[in-house]
Each structure stands twice: as C-alpha cells, then as structure tokens.
Image (cartoon, rainbow, N blue to C red):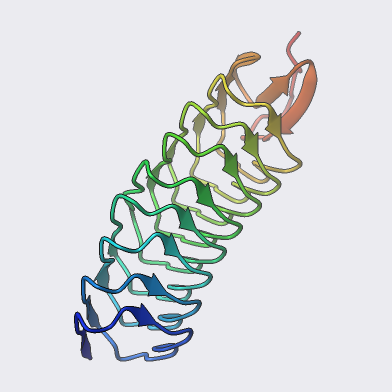
Length: 220
C-alpha cells in the first residue's frame, strides 16, 4: 500500500509499478531525475503524489488509469507532459501547471471526467489533439497569451464548458476542436466577440457548438 523510494535512486523504470492496484501512497526521493513511461499506470488506489524537483518531463501514460488520483504536485522546472500522462484520471479535479511547461501532448488529460478548472502555462503555444477531450466537468479553461494553435478534438465532449476566451496570439483552431461542447455559448477571440456559438478567424467559421439553439445566425 505504501512505497518509499530512497534518495539513492535516480530513475524509476518503465512500467515499474504498473497495475499495482492496492498502492495508495508513494514517496519519491529527491534524487530521482527520470520516471519512465507507464511507471504508475493502473495504480487505481493511488490518491496523491509529489514529483521531485529534478523531474523535467511527465512521461507517456505515467499516471494513466490512476482513477483515485486527486492531487499531483508538479515542480517548477517541468518542461513537458507527454501523451496520455493523466488519461482517465477520473478523480482529478484540479491541477497546478507551472509556467515552465512548454508542451502538453496528445491525450494528456483525456477523459479526466472530474477536472473542473485548468490554467495553462503562459508560454504554451500548442494544445495538441484530444488533450482535454472528454473532460465533461471542465467549466473553466484559462489560456496563456502565447497560444497559437488549438488542435483537432482538443476540447471535444467538454460538455460543461460554457465560455471561452481565446487569446490574441491565436493563429489556428483546427477541425472539431470544440466538438460537442453542448453548453458553449460564449466565444471571444481576436477576430470575433460573439455571444452565441461561433468562432470566426479571418472570415472563416472555425467552430460551431449548438448550445440548445434551434436557429443559428452566422454573424457578419
């Protein structure tokens, strides 16, 4: 149920604790500099974890299917969150993402159905495919002012999301980025400020969410 990783350890190998369903607590020594892919995947009783200060990436599927995980402490200095890192962490309600993070990869928080609020790092420029897809409790997302691209299906099926403020830096919003965001009524961005359902960039209709409207009028 509890594991203490001593300071003599510098790396946790791939799949080291994968599928340890009774593991509730892990204390990681401060000299750990790398945790490899899937190391804690499927640790369905793990509720909380603090990553040591030397960690610079959260590797692929590291905490995937950790369905009891509620709290993650991420150090400043982390650079990347890799694909599927927190996918299906269905008890995670919030997470503090330090501004040192430069990339968040595909599916990183996919299907985190309890996640309610996210403030993205200030230097993040791309939200990749499916990053927050299926986060059905997500009510608030705060974008950094350097964001340039929201990729396909990034926020698909975020059915609690009602308002979006797109920063002036945005260049591209890809296909179905906000697919089935059924409560989304308020889009605001550089090229459009519409109380309704549309995102228009350079005259191109990029996104449309029905949001219970029987009739839709595309603004001029």
